[in-house]
Amino acid sequence: MSQSLQLLTPNPTFSFTHHHPTPTKPTFPSSFPLISKSNLSLRSQNHPSPSRSAVASAATDLTSIEVDTVSETELKENGFRSTRRTKVVCTIGPVTCGFDELEALAVGGMNVARINMCHGTREWHKMVIERVRRLNQEKGYAVAIMMDTEGSEIHMGDLAGASSAKAEDGEIWTFSVRAFDSTLPEHTINVNYEGFAEDVKVGDELLLDGGMVRFDVIEKIGPDVKCRCTDPGLLLPRANLTFWRNGSVVREKNSMLPTISSKDWLDIDFGISEGVDFIAISFVKTAEVINHLRSYIDARSPNSDVALIAKIESIDSLKNLEEIIQVADGAMVARGDLGAQIPLEQVPATQERIVQLCRQLNKPVIVASQLLESMIEYPTPTRAEVADVSEAVRQRADALMLSGESAMGQFPEKALTVLRSVSLRIERWWREQKRYETIAHPSIGTSHSENISEEICNSAAKLANVLEVDALFVYTKTGHMASLLSRCRPDCPIFAFTTTPSVRRRLNLQWGLIPFRLSFSDDMDTNLNKTFSLLKARNLIKSGDLIIAVSDMLQSIQVMNVP
Ligand SMILES: Nc1ncnc2c1ncn2[C@@H]1O[C@H](COP(=O)(O)OP(=O)(O)O)[C@@H](O)[C@H]1O
Ligand SMILES: C=C(OP(=O)(O)O)C(=O)O
Ligand SMILES: [K+]
Ligand SMILES: [Mg+2]
Image (cartoon, rainbow, N blue to C red; front, side, top):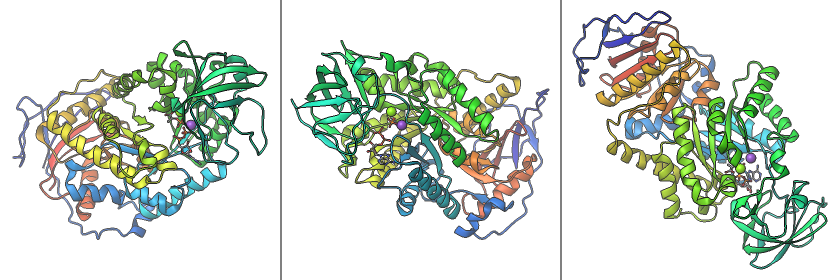
């Protein structure tokens, strides 16, 4: 039995009639207009649970549904409401690039694998992409791939093969733009930016790795800059480098460097040809850069549906924040570099502002860097790190990101487990606290039809909270309706059914969405029948569960008990 509201575009007729059968869960507020639909008669089908190999061949099987085993287990184990809503991005590096290690991350809940083009060779990245693909194909996961560009800001070079170098208090180090071959003189660091020795002044402060290690500039000798270490620490290969004068970051000629360097363009070509799902653009300064990249991709690969993530990590990006997020497909609060460009104490408020703005503009947002930094070395996070992760979850960011913790740390899987368990706990706490929170977002649609979709999703999410439904179902070809529902952060999980594997992977970055691949038609009754029988066969739903279904083919809301 179903109660539904349908808004038919382009010429919506808002005529509603009352005729509803008795629901088994709370009824609507009587003011809510309804039209009834005939009872759905479900063919009873008896599908065996698909084996792993069945999942692998599902792409061609029109009668099956694809969902990853981890989401499936999480849904079954603790009930729908306890399913994790916050997504996790893991940076892949030397300790996690093996197939088994990647699988362990997928089992641990990794939603997106990030490769950072600052490090490693293209062959290495290609190998990681192929392994993630194989994992998806063989094991039914929908792990998306995010390629992160190097960008053209200043960073130090490699340490002639060493994995790190220790700078001690008071030591004199030389930062040089000279090219060294395989051996580096002692206490020497190569800098990738030619204008460095020219731009820097005696008395400036150098911050490496977002301020983890600091130096004072004491002398300039041609291409060499002599510096004294004031905050000792570990120098890592290719760590970022900024210099500060009178309390703010100096952006001389390096601010004129193109956001996308010639190496980045080659990496982008590589990413497009490999079919990555996301490209994260480092040090975005303006919306124009994103628009330019999008036209480039459209011209080069018209069928590509790669999503562009703007990394907010510079002063320039903060100046143009709204325009940048508006044109991007999502944003990353890249706190590593951001914390080296603005005073550290401004980072938390900036993070909150970016997260809120993304939610308003309906763009997924990732909170990144140093979430569990101590877990690179230790198996337990600090209390402060747990509080930081909790805050990002409480802000309801779409995703959290691991960097060094999963790329080169000693406890990648443990770090992932911490993110997962903290997310679950804070989400539950938040639901208990904020039940019936009213959802009010500015309207973002630019057409009548878009406004209708948006209002449908707002209403569906509100209904889902009030009626305490078990799940929201959304049938979406492009993923747009699913993201509009996610934006409302409803109390129940959102089952997003989509026909295309790439849309399914892309939705895996967004808060609360459990993406399924399913072939469906424009006929909602048929779609619902099919979904119910397939999900029942996998013991994911049972008769009597209350669901709300929305669709972007037929703009409608249907409330129903699973027959
Ligand atoms: N592909 C890779 N190959 C080798 N080391 C890597 C790779 N990706 C990441 N790492 C290591 O993990 C650390 C953290 O990763 P990330 O935060 O992405 O880079 P960065 O610290 O350079 O911004 C890096 O400093 C580097 O030591
Ligand atoms: C995520 C970030 O970028 P990257 O690791 O590429 O420097 C950051 O700066 O926080
Ligand atoms: K990068
Ligand atoms: Mg960065």
